[in-house]
Image (cartoon, rainbow, N blue to C red; front, side, top):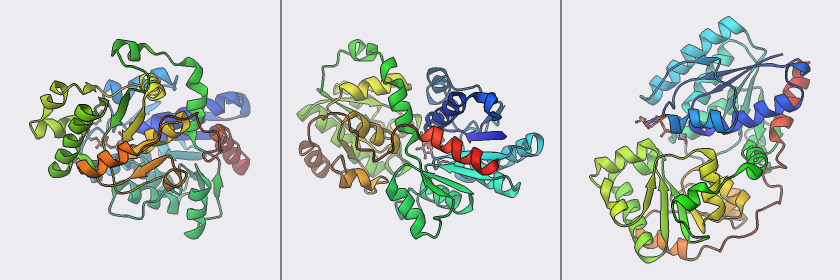
Length: 365
Ligand code: UD1
């Protein structure tokens, strides 16, 4: 069985690592599974890509398309074209795409055009707004794939309500597989290096286009971060390149640092997990960090009106809403203190990768 993983952006490297690890745990090629990895190249900076291959012990890409930055249309088209050539050449028995980025959609279209069975990991997530690019990517991918693997029961129910119950499975979240697997490998060097005190800082990330690409909105968010730093607690802010460029564009690059905010480059997996483990809470528009916050027992305030994981809001682990200073500060002030890591099974049992590989293998046997 020849299995092609298609990835290209930061959040996908975690997910494919868990699935690929499961292939190895099940016996690697001894199970009759031959894997190859296609990297579209949408993310290319060391701290957006290579660091995760090193830290997660992910196999080097067998194919690299060098798609790079550009328009949504350009990234999808280049991934589709490049992946098509690989499918022609290698002829895999199945393709797996992950999450909801442009690499997901480009890879999915290529597989279906080549009549190669297609699996979507992290299926059934919906915000209900098709004008948001990730929603479009995942909704289209879910519609055209053969197997949909869901992180939560709600995702599975959503697919059922869209008439997609057949071929859909609740396998759990590959991010939880990684969280469990790497807990014993964490090191706290970054906490000491930055002089951070236990539960005395807020870990913040902002990268959604909806937050970075509208100057008024980004300005309001920056004002709020400054107010948190002044009036509430230390802020630690690893910056996605998109966000750094947008902040520089507003001419506010130095303002956060002068106020005492700890601004860093994007961080690797281990540093992020260490920062999370010692934080007071998380302020983030990242769906991945939101879930990891829950795994670690940290509340997450989402600076965005859409909660892509409403089950976490419902369970009292997160809150979503407007970014204006008053509203956001109020949500932060009402946030519960750090809790014991969660073990409810909302996101499965940490064996999502294994479940995914077993289902695909059985279906192709
Ligand atoms: C993409 C995904 C988003 C995901 C995010 C995680 C889409 C539509 N969006 O958004 O769903 O949550 O990745 O990070 O696929 N850049 C660099 N170096 C890099 C990569 C990007 O400097 O290695 C800069 C470029 O200026 C680029 C900008 O960041 O134009 C945005 O990158 P892009 O890949 O288009 O989208 P993301 O915001 O990363």
